[in-house]
Image 1 (cartoon, one colour):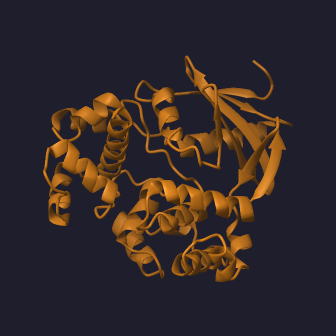
Image 2 (image 1 turned 45 degrees about the vertical axis):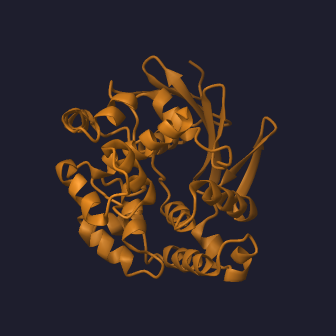
Length: 302
């Protein structure tokens, strides 16, 4: 094996191909590139960009780190991939639950091995969630691309431009007009800059949120921030803070998925959405993610 390579061994409840299919969902994704079954991404490591590639391997995931692949760089990339793909999670209890549940059964069978693909950076998670509020996912991707290409760092490799997500410190120094010029609505521009300033000042950190000790305490802290409601708070809990039980009950995609799977002729009410999730407690984030994926896969088949 080459010096810059490492194998991340995974369990039987992980499928690289299922996660790759999820990562392939938008041609406007700007944080990584996909080609020939390989994902290439740049990440920030102590202020320096590190480029890596990952692909499927019989034992799990083969990762190749570009440039000076020191042991520290390889270890950092390995930690990132573990977090990104939630590799430390044992999904067997979730799959046992899903096999017993008529709402989840088809989704867990079809997408077995899928993880809640995360967003390890707290600021990036907030920006993505805010951009996605009350608009289509496809347009949110367009706005994210504009934001990243305007304010993020770029590195070139093999004729491809790879972007690092804009830092909170960079965005904290902006005024809302700079974001409105990208067609990001005025209030969302204000929310994003406000959160950037909280993070840049050290008043909002991933470690600090996790230290609060539970989802409800974290949700209470986050919803006290301007622009953050229960949906956004639970999205951050799911995608960045890694709660397996976060539940964005007001999510439109979740409502559409439940309508489809339950065979309803209308979208469920919020109390019905809460009732559907009663048997999923402890795994509601995973249930939501699988239902999102199932809804998308059904749309792709049409």
